[in-house]
Amino acid sequence: MTAVKPAYDIEQWRRRIPLLRTQIPMNNCSQAPQMDATRVAAERYLESWNGSGMDWDAWMREVALAKAEFAKLIGARASDVAVFSSVSEAASAVASALDLSGSRRTIVVSEAEFPTIAHVWIAQEQRGARVTWAPLRDDAVDESAYDTLIDDRTALVSACHGYYMNGALQDSARIAKLARRAGAYTFVDAYQSLGTIPFDVRQLGVDFLASGNLKFLMGIPGIAFLYVRPEIVETMHPMVTGWFGRANPFAFDAKSLDWSPTASRFDTGTPPVINAYVARAGMEIISTVGTASIRAWLVELGQHLIDGGRARRLTLHGPSDMNRKTSTTAFVVDDSHHVESAMRERGVIASARGNVIRLAPHFYSTIDDVERALDILAEVVRAT
Ligand SMILES: Cc1ncc(COP(=O)(O)O)c(C=O)c1O
View 1: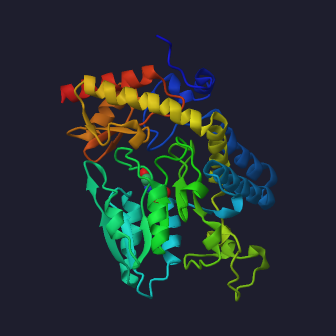
View 2: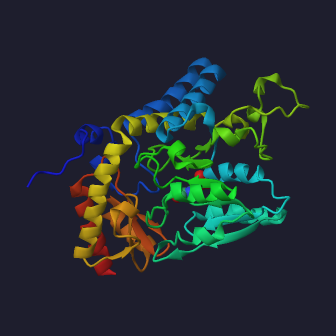
View 3: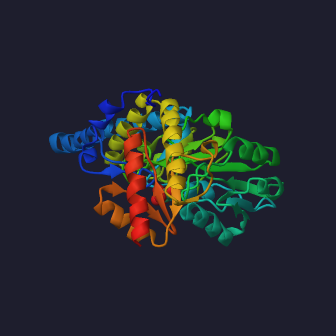
């Protein structure tokens, strides 16, 4: 039998992740490990701050480069991207730009949204929105529901790409097409898949796509990016705004709300600079490895998780077909937080959510890592 290997030199990448000496990180759906390059990036900011006291030009350049790196990952231009501190903030800015004064007031929300996203849409009920739900069936969104839920009263459809609980994928292209046909916008939260699957926002046809950086983009908390489809950007006037959303933030004209002609009209205040340094370094790693090669390897590892879980009599949560899921595989357990800490004591970092434990390998993970994580999970489940 030929050895199954990724298309890249995995050992070379593994040497650049110090945590691998002591732990098996299977929690990339929650926080990816530190790499040499992301640490150096944070230190570059600290050095700049220490050495020059203040270097706003360099710091703003770094934020612009981070936007460009995000744009590269999704097939967009840097000018189509705004920066925030969290995905919640990005969604709130999008919500604040929706005109809900007419008959188009419905926001169609999938039950697979991370709660924060749903909360943002529900909060819009205070200004007239009506939220309807695309339901979960068999632990994945019943996508046929969109056919009847989306109509000429729909303002926006919020459908995450990957479900945070178990990685179930939604067909963003089909949903965006339905929404566009009905005259509604599409908002895609790609936090659980970006960095592991090739993306082309132009092909998908979505209006908004957001992600933070601490999961599969190898970054840290405190920064998130929002893509805005360039054809709609000039029609958007977000009420969540600030001086960085202006045509020229440095005009210091308090009385003029002149909108930037690009997606940076969604920018708000002083951006998260140190986070941008780290975010760019993390996204550069992902681009260098290549999302097509990463996806191919993660399909392999995902299949090992599904088959290995079945062989160990673990209860899978969500789809068993890798074409329908991200690299995250979830198993139902009685007390997920106990399982997470018992696994950590045995050297595997897994991620608990509700009644499931998530195993989320990434490009640097090996088949041995996956097998060991499954062995330990099965051992902990048996013991409890
Ligand atoms: C799919 C998804 N969206 C959003 C979030 C949270 O986003 P933020 O804390 O940046 O608002 C998470 C975090 O865990 C997530 O998994």
